[in-house]
View 1 (cartoon, rainbow, N blue to C red):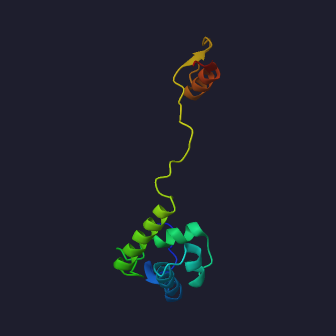
View 2: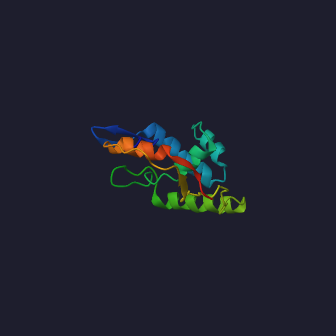
View 3: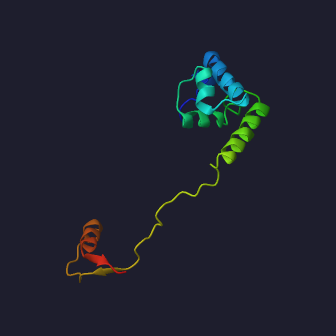
Amino acid sequence: MGHTPYGYRIENGRAVIDEEAAGKIRKLYENYLAGMALTKAAAAAGIETYHGTVKHMLQNRHYPGDDFYPALIDRETFDKVAAIRLERADKLGRLNRAKKSKPLTVPTRFRFAEAEKRYEDPRLQAEYLYSLIESEAV
């Protein structure tokens, strides 16, 4: 299991609600539903963190409860926040942004020098053969 989400602590191998932190999470959701921006909603709730972290907190699938974590907020609130977050992102043009990345090209043809040695050890043979690569054939 990864780290324990903000608002919980582990006692005797079970997740329990940390009431002080859980109150801040509930206030965060309330502030966001009231129209506050991500970092302002978090700051007003007493959570000093970054924009991206707040976004992840609002998307934390453990907060409405699951098999291990008890519910901090109700499912209706969680779903409302998700819908509003997507609506705001769409209005700001932040959905469906294509990320620019170089296409991955894997060389498939090489030019080798003539192999003159043979090793019994497969690792040594592989190292030797790799050393014979002169260049990629385009």
